[in-house]
Length: 203
Image (cartoon, rainbow, N blue to C red; front, side):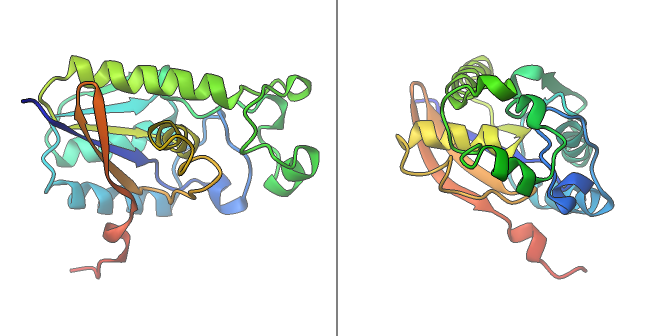
């Protein structure tokens, strides 16, 4: 009986996270604090002994994944644009309070807002579930780390819990770890939004 662990990780902090600007698919690098978060997380993840690492192709996720890979002695990070954050169209790069004024339910609506060219949450969830499932099937009997984005992870949790958790209900922290057990075709949630590594005292 094959069971695999999946560790879904939100990328480290960016300057736009600090300034509360909507990133979406804008390619924003990690801040200094984000780099520190990723290094701290990488040390913490040594206990999990991941076999392979996947990442969104956006630099904030890829930079986080590379730091984890280097610490885990994994030579290659597998990159895909299918794990990108939700596309918010013309709302991207705007302050969050301005976005909320324009589309009050922008983060939780499931329709495509044509006026702003937003990707629908339904489409985001579809590509997320499909991509993650493909990865786990391909990496049979291996423990996998995937570094991506809060909207992506929350859509996945929403799918697994039939809307009881995830999108609109859970605020994921930067470099948080959510752990799942996969036994094809079944999923089990082990833990969500864990940030123990950020609260450890330095040596």
